Image (cartoon, rainbow, N blue to C red):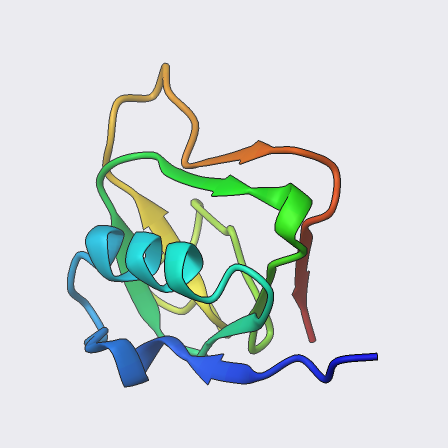
Amino acid sequence: MAVKTFYNIEDYGAVEGEDITSILQTAMNFDHKNTIYIPAKKYYISDTITTYATYGCSLFGAGFSANLDNLSNPGGATLVWTGDRNTPMILIIGTSFIFDGA
C-alpha cells in the first residue's frame, strides 16, 4: 500500500489573505493521490475548484472552517468564496474524496 504524501498549500505559493484559486487547483491536479493541507489562515477562492475524486485526493484544513458569519475571527483554515453564488466552490467528480479538518 502506497503512503500518501502531505503537501502544505503554502508550498505551492499560497499566501494568507490572497486568492489561491489557481494554486489550489494546480495542487489538486498535480497531487490528486495525496493530501493537500490548508493552514489555519484565511484564503480566498474566486472560481470553482474541480477535482476528480476517483484518484483519492484529500483536502485537510487545520481547524477547518466555512464560517461566513464571522470572517474576522475564523479560528481555523478558512476558504472565503468570492465567486458567483450560483456556482459551487468545489466541484467533486467521482466518489473518493476526503474533505476534513481537525
